[in-house]
Image (cartoon, rainbow, N blue to C red; front, side, top):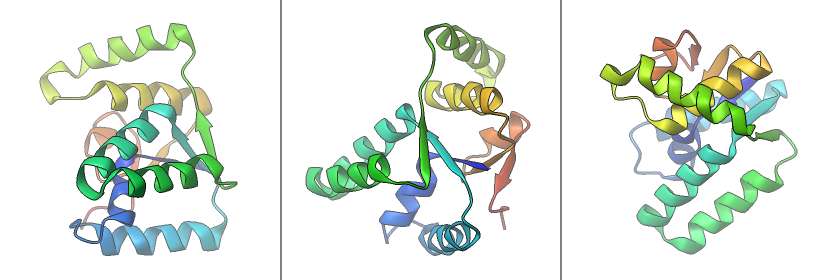
Length: 136
């Protein structure tokens, strides 16, 4: 079981991304292992927004649909009370430049018992999660 962060999706779909080759290989490995994948509505928001700005609205919408329609991915949603927990996480890491979406991801990962994240964002390691694939 692994949480998929926005950078993993973005790097997979944007060939000009510096992590593209690593991301494609990692996605192939996850598919071969039939790994259970989780992401969140906020990650979906980040991905579609970023891709829309970089590659256009159609491209972004198609990729958003692929996330929503994936049988391998479970889309997690925050409970109303969990937003308060995410704000507390933002306060805890205020000096690290942590974004709200990442704080929400941490709350969701803890709720689901997820220990690993498919991400290129060091904030996940800072929060005690295992970052996968490992950095070079």
